[in-house]
Length: 214
Image 1 (cartoon, one colour):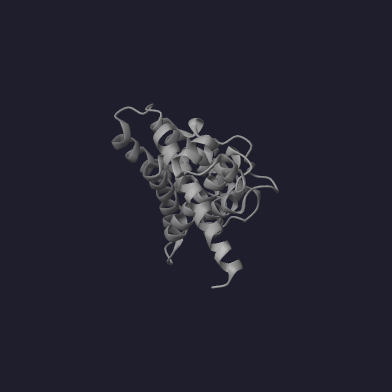
Image 2 (tube, helix red, strand yellow; image 1 turned 45 degrees about the horizontal axis):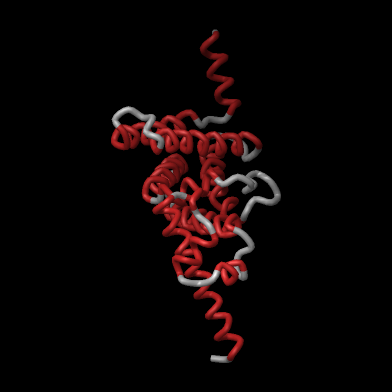
């Protein structure tokens, strides 16, 4: 191993140690309590060394957020694997998202609560965009299977699906759902099922509305 290669490997090890320490501290004390000095004390390095890798605490959090969305993307990809019917895939993606949130509550809260991280813009991180695509693409397939088009409607449906799930997750995490997680799990299953059943092309909905008024 050459000198340059060894240095790069050492930098990678230190960077990973910094992120691991930040994750431990945040899971123990909360993201708001995370500081560069706290990270340095945890791994017995100087704050100056930490700043050599990350310019601020926010930069550390952004990196952890990216890792969180990367892990979520892998899980959603697993849910999309195979050749299931589009409706089944949409439901599986929704429940995989739900499971990730409660298996990883602290990272999930960081991923969706860090101010200054853009979403829906040209500056959206690649990991976040990949997770959106994991929601959007199965819905495109579902709408096309039901005679719809892959235009604005599919984007709106994907955003609504994500919003519905995130809303229920947030209420559950903040203990706003009666009987807690057990009942919330049933509500999540109902949510994804109702969403799929209601996910019809607008043209078809209009036809049904006309038939009902006759």
